[in-house]
Structures are given as C-alpha cells and as structure tokens.
Length: 270
Length: 269
Picture (cartoon, each protein chain N blue to C red):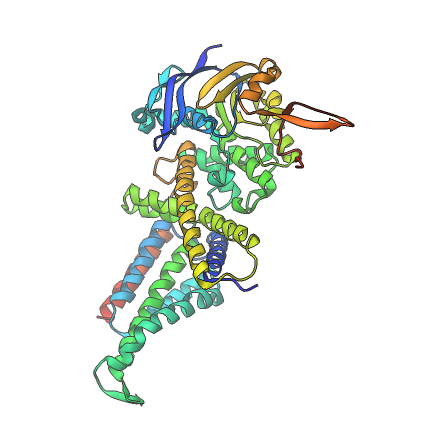
C-alpha cells in the first residue's frame, strides 16, 4: 500500500516542554492504526501534527508525498483540499462544537470549504441520518449529553467524507452503550476503505478499531506491530504504562498479574 | 442557597448565554427585519441609531424610538422582553449617570429638593441622555435578535470590516459559551468541597485563585477552539449557507431607512 503519512525525526515542544522527541513513522493509505500510549505520551500532539495544525519544530511531515509546511497550510490552494481529505475529531467535543445548532455545526466544515448550497444541505441531511441524530438538528450542541456530543462531533467531520479520519480518544468518558455506538460508526465508516488513525489508551477497543499499533512513550515510538503482536506483549504494555500489575486473592493465595485497566467499564476498590 | 458575588455573576452570564441561544430562534422566525438582507439591516439600523445619537431634540429622538418599537413589533420581538432586559437595565445604568445633571446644570429652576435646585435645562439634559442611550441600545438589540450571529459577521465583512476583526468576533462568540460552562463547573466543584461559610478574606482569596485558574484554562481552551475551527477549514472568513442578494424590497427598505434617518437628523439638528 502506498505511504500516506511519512514522519521523520519529528520534534515538538510546548513552551520548552518536549512532547515529541525525534518521532518517525509511516502510515499507509487505507490502514487502520492505533496510537497507543499513556497520558502525556504525545498522542494528541501527534494527531494535531498529522492534521497540519502544529508545524513540527524539527523534522518533516509529508502527506501523500507533499511536505506539510506552515506556508503551504496557509495557502488556500493547498489548505482547502487538505482539510477536505484529512479530518480530526478532538478529544473534548466541547471545543469542537461551537455553533448555535447541531445542523449549523455539521454544516460548518462544508461551508468553510465553499461547497455549493444544495450539496451542503443534502450532505448534512444524509450525515445526520447516518449517525442517527436527525432529531437533534435544532438543538444547541452545548446542551447535549456526552454521547450525543461525541456523535455530533463525528458528524461534523464525517460530513466531508474525508480520506483520513484522525480520532483523539474516540470513546473516552463515554458510557458503554455510547462507546459501542461510536465503535460501530467507525467500523461502518471504515467499510469504504478509509485511513483511520485513533489515539487511545483504552486497550479494550483497540482490536475493534485498528489493525496496526504504534506504542508511544515519552514522545517517541517505543514499538509497533500488528494489533495481536502488540496486545500479546504484556511486558511492553506494562512498560508503556498501559497495563498494571493487579494484586488480588483467591482464598488464602494472593498473587499479581498484568491487568488491563478501563475506567469506563469498572472501578477498583482500595 | 445563598450564592456569593462570583457565583451570582457566573450564573447571570449562564442565563444571558441561554437568552442568546433563544435569540437565535427569534432570528430564524419570519418577520419584517428578518425578511431583509442582513447588510440592509446593519446599514439601516446603524443609520437610525446615528440619527438618534446626533439629534438634539427630545421629540425627534422619541419618534425614532417609536420607529424602533414598531420594527420590534413587526419583527415579532417581545416588547415585554425588551422592556425587562433592555429598557429597564439601560434606565438604571444611564439614570445614575444622568442624575447629577438635573441638579448641576445651570438654568431656569423648576423645583427644589432641600438645598438642591432642579433646573429645566438639567431635566432636559438628563432626559436627552437616557432617551438617546435607550434608542441606540434598542436598535443594537434588534439587530442581534433578528439576525443570526454568523449573518451579522458576514454582513460586517461585506461592509468592509477587516478580516482580523471578524475572526476576533467569531472566536469571542464561540468561546464565551465554553468559558461560562467551565466557570460554572469550577464553582460547582468548589462548592461541593466547601463546608460552612468561609471568612470574607478567604472568600476573596478563593475568588482570586478561581479567576486565575479560569484565565489559564481559558487561554488553553481558546487555542483549542481555534484549532478545531481551523481543522474544519476556517480561514478567518465567515461562510454561511445563505448567499446575500438584494431584492427590490431590500432597496426600498434601505431607501426608507436612510430617508427616515436623514429626516430625523435634519429635524433634530
């Protein structure tokens, strides 16, 4: 498969605090990739760099053979088609939902990309139906529940039918039902041979949304491989802070073993 | 439960934001102002506002205010809402500023209040100020109530307002909702961890700390909101579904607005 994203020695820092340190990776067209890492490992920063929102301080990022530079992204001739092809769903839907109604929200991106009026109306209507949120069209996004907000946030980018979908913690903070709905949506959307890159630390959803995994640690790629390979490597997951040793007792015997941790599905008692 | 100044203010903002949301509904209703091209609305209402501001005659300003009220009625804007949220509030604020003028303006005495003398010229000056501000704020409110915010921005851009100013206004509108929600959550969280009543000095320190944290959060979130807009193609130019086009009715309305404003300016000179 041809390479779509090519990153070489990418570095990025927030006010002197490094977030990415010499990160290199390739992502091919049509791949389903998960960026796996603990909090602060650089997943969200990497997604923003892939979306051309942050220029790397060092190194290079290219999309479909074209290097992403600040100048190029400010040029409408490059930027508008790029925004049409690559879309990012932010971790916090509140920052993504800023229009008075759900309909306006979903119509925002097509309008910015200067689509014809009839096309905007048709695509927004179809997308609202596809995500089962037509009944919310006149509601104010900020008053919706967490699951509804996430679906509207997804609708607001899926409406563009982008080639690449970047998802930042797509199911974080969602209840199990909303989580399952979002995963189904991603799987159905993927059906049309799109590239899906998801950043997450929730191991239990990775098999559903990715075929290949990059494990990020301290702003670099600690390991990569197929989903089965990476999820089977408990030592790696333990080191990357994605699982922890769980101590418990069976009658008189106490033992510990690596344990997948999900805040969404259960809680630990001290 | 009794709320402190900070909480009351935040709750007040939250209510105001809800009203803004409701105003979007008014803007999408069918009505006189809503039927006009947004550029005509901006220019026409601004011309009448200017006429009220420069006019020196009470009767002329009152006539312009009557035009504003008629526009509100035909645009299906609630007069009760206007009275409660605009006229009374403006009267309270401007009244305080105008009150001294009643006593300190030299002129023909009409009444005495203890040692102070109320003059005819003082009463006139105070009435002029209050009426001018009431009229100006009514026109501004009508524009915002009868026009979706995105259309106001596009109309201002079409009338030559710089792209940077438009970006700033667009960001402010989008961001203010989020800021109010964050502030409300912070205050709720603080209240859930506070037992009893804190001494006033501690309350002030707490308010200062909350404001500081909110500012830091607001900078980070503001940046994220902008990135989210940029990610979906926002380049500083507001795009809306409706394409503005002037009809014959728009030209007639614009002519009437400008004619009324010119007559008011001439009569009120």
